[in-house]
Length: 56
Image 1 (cartoon, rainbow, N blue to C red):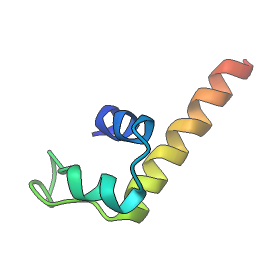
Image 2 (image 1 turned 90 degrees about the vertical axis):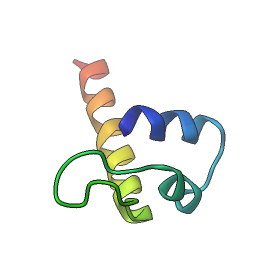
Image 3 (image 1 turned 180 degrees about the vertical axis):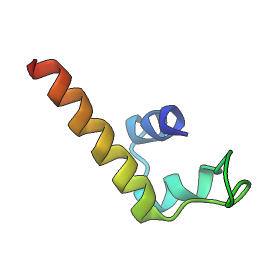
């Protein structure tokens, strides 16, 4: 789901539009769409991880 979210972000979609296109693939909420807040959190965590590894 993260790879797809990164691809959609490159296309300039809003968080709400990204959430509508993404689908949760595992767990209790499998088959449902994540909330825009979840998408934002996922992208923020990814950005923090990439900047931490780039700075090391």
